[in-house]
Every structure is written in structure tokens, then in C-alpha cells.
Length: 417
Image (cartoon, rainbow, N blue to C red):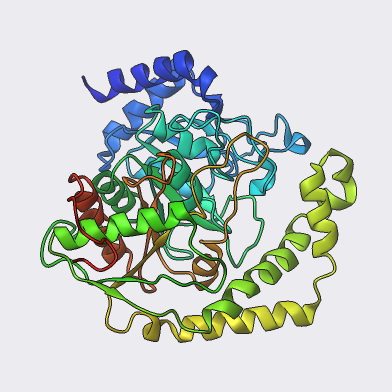
């Protein structure tokens, strides 16, 4: 099947199956997709006509862009966001807009979780994660301000990659918190992620993915923001056992005390900035905002300039101390989410296991392949030092390969015995 046939089959598949998933809010027509595919193939980009879904928080000239809010219903931007332009230059074909929560906050979308029916797909990149999980597209774009790439990837059982802050371009993204908003990607496996991320970024992030020695993994069993849930512990123990069985080195570490203040600082940074980025929406359209966002913005307006400055100082101090966190290890493993995807659609889940890393601007990768206490998807998060996206992806590939092997019986995962 050639690329043009694949694109048309993708559109037909989305039209036939997305009614049960609700991943897309706008879709290209056949003629539009054909033109885009011809352009992509003529340009010679590495993606070679690959179908891509883009979160509806990014401006697109060819599609309506509502940012998940009735305030912008039918809105048609005049130009594409920078990440959409980058995808097109890389040879990708944007086939539609993926559902997002309202302004990428917490009000749930109508998207369902293909890997855990009856459970939330997460947020705010729910549509992007679900589109890949359902096999509707091989690549989708999302964003993370708290945990909106890593968490839905964990809940939907796919790979989610949040590169370092600013590594993928944000112009044309409807901002929520300009110090935190980060562009991320979703794919089915780490190899595809590395190839696509490299093509879009223009950085050598896939170089050496499968070559050389495995990175040294660190794992902690105590955290300053929450205790490990039964599902989080099970997934982490499964990852540690699989890596050791594959011959990788895993070292147990204690997390530094400064991570606690960094975690706390995230709320002040996000809230102070959100109150300003959505000031007009609150002032002139608050009656059309969801109660959860309206109440959040009302409270965020009370965050003082001093609170914000102190939070930025805590973040800067944490970034300056990152080398110490990775002393003796190459990457760190944590759960990707508090647990399995919560039942129902009234909540998108908590970003507690992601906020500190988002504020620190480090690259993070959700690796699927583990499960929680009831057998639902439960991801493991790989965290790498600043500007080490290639290392993050390499470690994720090693972990993915290890998890793909059946677990060995009769050993203590935490001890490696």
C-alpha cells in the first residue's frame, strides 16, 4: 500500500470507528488529504506521508480550532501553529484535530479510552492518546503543562514523549502557562517515537537508539508528593525485574529534599500564569467556562507576585541541582501516573507524578507494557537530564524491550534476587 492509499484508508477507518472513541473533533476530507499527501511526498520529508493527529489546542488554517471551549466554536485561524508547520516540512499529513479538554485544563472531553473501556483516557491530550491507542493514526501531537502527555499515555497504554521545555516549538499553541506548556508526541512504540521525534525536531534524537550499552537506571521507592499506590509499585517492580533480567543495571536511590519544594512550586507558576493567559476569557466569557476552570481561575487570581517569584526561584534552584539527582545513574524511573485510569469520565486523573518534572523542564517518556493491580494499563516514566532527549528515548527503548519479555517466576523484583 502506498502513502496515498494509506491516508485514504486512515480517513475511512476514523470515519468508521471514531464514533466509539471520540478522539477527533475535525477531520480532513479525501481531496484535502490527497493534496497534502502529494505535497508531503514531493517534499521528501522523512515521515513520507504519515498520518498525524494534532491536539485541538494548536492553530490550524485547514481545520476549525476551538481549544476545547464553546467560546471558540467554529474559530478558523489564519495560519498554522509552528509544530503543524514542522510536521508538514517533515513530510507528515495532518488528517484531523484531536479532542482536548477545555483550554487544556481539567474539564473532561467526550473521548473514551480504547484500552480501558469505562475508564478515563486522561487529559488534557485525551484525543491524541486515544487516537494512537485505537490505531486510528500512528502519530499524534499533544501538550503537557502538568502531566497531559505522560498521564494519558499511561492510561491508554501507548508511548508518550515530553521532550525538554521548548525543544518542540510552541508558537500557535493556545497558552495556559507559558513557563510550563510543552509540546509532546504519542506513538505505539519507542522506535516509531524516536524516528518521528527526530524528523519533526530536526535533532539527532534517534541516533544510537539500539546501539551501545544500556543506560544505568535509577529507581526510588519514596517520593515527596505521594506514596506509591499498589498499581504504581507493581508497575515499577515489574520494570526493575525486567531490566535486571535483561542485564541492565538498576540502582536504588533516595530523592533529594529539594524535589518537594519544586513540586509545590508548580501550582503557583501554573496558576499565576493561567490567570493572565485566560484573563479575557474569564472577564468576558466566564458564564461559558466550565465550573472547574472558572473556579480555578478565580482562585488563581489570588496568587501574589511574591508567590510567583518564589516559585520561579524554587524551579531555578531545582534545575541547577539536577546534576546531583542523576549522580551515579543515567535516567530515573517512576510511575507515570498515580495508578490505573480512574473509572468513569468525570475526572481526567491527577498529574501528581508529572508536575515536578514538567517544571524542571526535563525530557520524560511513558513506556507502556506494565499493568496495575486490576490488569489495566499502568505506564513507567523514564526521566532524563536536561537536553538529553536521545538518552531518554534510548532508555525507553531498552525498557520497552525488557518489558516485552515474559516475567521470570520466583524472584523479588525490588531486590533483583
